[in-house]
Amino acid sequence: MNNTSDTQTTVADAPVLFSQQGAIGQIVLNRPRALNALDLVMVDMMMGQLKSWETDPSIKAVVIEGAGEKAFCAGGDIRGLYDARKNDDEDLLDAFYRREYHLNHYIANYPKPYVALMDGITMGGGVGVSIHGMFRVTTERTLFAMPETGIGFFPDVGGGYFLPRCPGQIGMYLGLTGARIKAADCLYTGLATHGVATDKLDSLKADLAVASYEGDAKAVIADILKRYETAFGEAPLATLRDDIDRTFAGDSVVAIFEALEREETAFGKETLDILAAKSPTALCVSFDQIRQGRDMTLASVLNMEYRMSQRMVRKPDLFEGVRAVIVDKDHAPKWQHGDIGQVDPREIAEYFEPLPAEKELNL
Image (cartoon, rainbow, N blue to C red; front, top):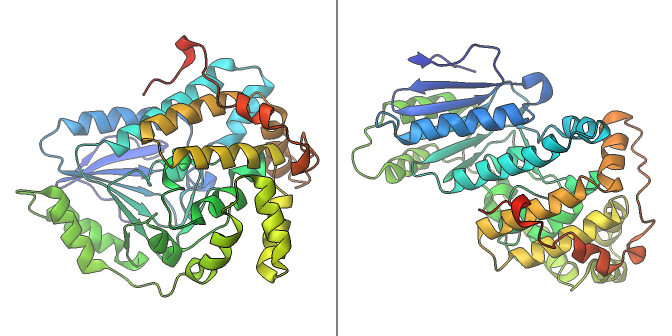
């Protein structure tokens, strides 16, 4: 990656690099060996720099990308949170989600254009620092997913806001199954605003840096992106749309399971197998999150998700899911409930209850 700059503001081995490229403030997530996974230090660094650039008249827009060739950002540093719970580090369990969600909300309301280059793996926390930006650029290397139900969590960072705004029931499908999608699907769902080939990104950044931003900076960037627009073919999700809409429209996770069982198709069987491996509790929590989020603002969704996060990090399924997938890697989690029929709706409702006033996120 070409990272020459006019002004270098951090040392080369910092977890996030900031530089000024002409009129552009550039952010590079710089943990390539960890697939640029997001930790609290990175969240705080980004918030501080974005606030500085907000009032800097020489910065007309922000571009964020990931170091290396594999990932934009593969998610939050879940192993760090696992260790925090193991060590009873209550402060980190509170602070990480609190400050991450504040950053997500700040990006969504940033007064200058924010351009996320989602080149490579873009999951979880990586979605949070891209999806809320004004411009979201997918490439042929993009692999997008919200896989949280597979580790006993829910699709957070505003998933309750952006998933139900996908076409039909696709957001529910993506949120519950954790399905991985590529460029054509990112564009079809609206999760990405533009598609650009990876080998054109350096030229795109160069054009953004030297553009004249007199007038409407958003319009200037939109025109530049249009010149680089790349077609990525038909979206696989478009061909599955009828199946997804038919089976994921139910009023509960149990109803979705029953609809899939009635299908007697390859789609029905494969999707049932995928859901059966997820945490039953996480599936039910995620279902309610996505359904409720349809009619909520992003701020309200993030307030809700913070409440959910503080319950989830203290429940057994997240700890067990991270153990099975990331720590021991046996991929054989023993969930709190054996199947979806054992989950009590009253238990799920507790995840959404208000926290004590002094603990709320209050966006």
